[in-house]
Amino acid sequence: MEVILPQKYLMTISGKSTYEQISVQSKPGKDTYVYNRINKILENKPFAEMESKLSYIETYKNFGTRKLKSDFLIVSLILLIAGMNVYNTLKTNLLIRTNEFSTLRAIGMTVKQLKSMIIKESIIYGLLSSIIAALIGGYRVYRFYKMLNEDYSHGFGATHLPQFKFPVIPILLYSAIVIVICILSSYVSAKKVEKLNIVEGLNITE
Image (cartoon, rainbow, N blue to C red; front, side):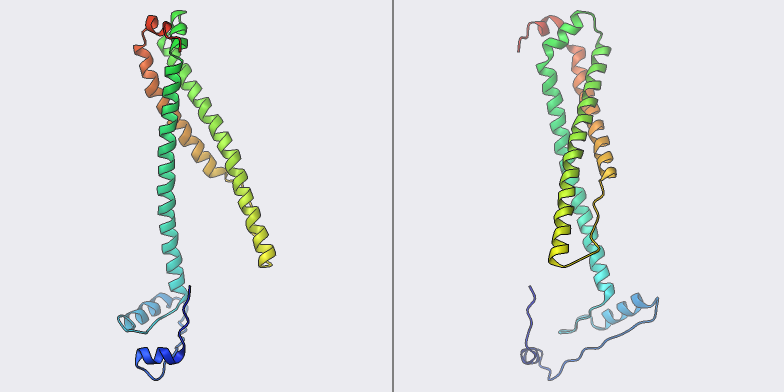
């Protein structure tokens, strides 16, 4: 929201009978120096304001930095939650399959082979979940670009529209992180297989 104050009210509030607007054009390479000097002159002076392309650039940079920090925090929380979900899923899967693991141990499978099987299964789980997430995420990004282009072209008559690009790098990074989380989670969970009692495991029916 922007409040536009009539000139007579501005003069009454400021106690001045006139107000002035001055435009300053600096030489190439002196923009920052002139901007800082004028800012220093106008410092702590009421009803004095300066607009400059440098201020907009600075504001944009600050906004970009804040947004980057915010996005990083959100992504970190999502990865933390995803990691906990993966760990709990794999751990629950191992508990449910105790009877199966005991049977495999009873017919001659070694602990090393059993742990290797669990880790391979977790890698497959990570790959499948990454593929599904990539397809769903890519489609949603495509829908967003499509909606954005329709709004720009129909509402504003824009011709230079942003083009959709499949987010390959983010997907690869996400997939790598998910697979690493799956491997670590399965490795921690598979350590319990070493303490598995075959007789007790075979007696478990559920």
